Structures are given as C-alpha cells and as structure tokens.
Image (cartoon, rainbow, N blue to C red; front, side, top):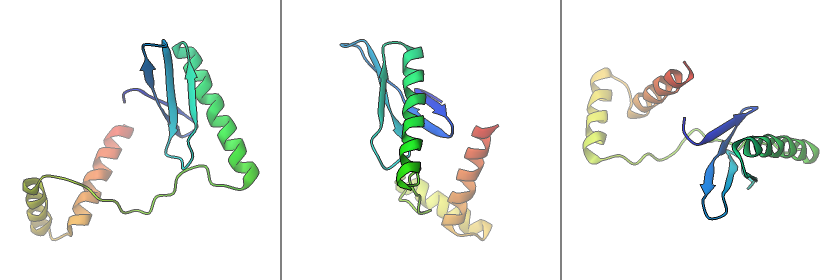
Length: 114
C-alpha cells in the first residue's frame, strides 16, 4: 500500500506539495469531497482522523450513508490479447468471463488481506 492512510474503514490519499511544504489528501470512497492537510506526517494523520470523525458525524446527523454505494458492475479496459486469453480460459473452465474476473479479483483481494 502506497501513499494511503486508513482509519475506521476509510482510506485517505496522501500527497506532498513541495512549494508549500505541505502534506494533503482526501477521503476516498465517499460521494463528497473531504480534504485534510498537515505540515508533518503526524499532523496529516491527525487531520485525516479528525476529517473522518467529522464526516461520519455529519452523515449521521443528516441520515446519509457515509460510504459511496457500489453497483457491483464496472468497465475494465484491457488489451485485446488479454481479453482473448481471458475468454479462452473462462471457456475452457466452463465459466463466464464475468465469473473468471470475479475469481481473479477475489484472489487478489484475499492475498492483500493476508
């Protein structure tokens, strides 16, 4: 994992602006734009956690789900060669291309969690 913070299930991006000597980021995976910043790593972490707490509190107050909703479908852009290879593998395994992609993503996500 690179340039990311996590807190209470939320992920924060991390960037550095050399000109202002400032770390900054935003909460990812939400429908709103919530940013945070700090002059040091410790300040950035604290600002991120405070931003999460404030956002969760605000969502609760207005009855809004804090996380972005996911439909379960998305477009994937790959090379024609990889598309053909994936189709062939799925066909030989007797599954759909969607099932093959789902298995591959599940495997990747499980490896990340270990």
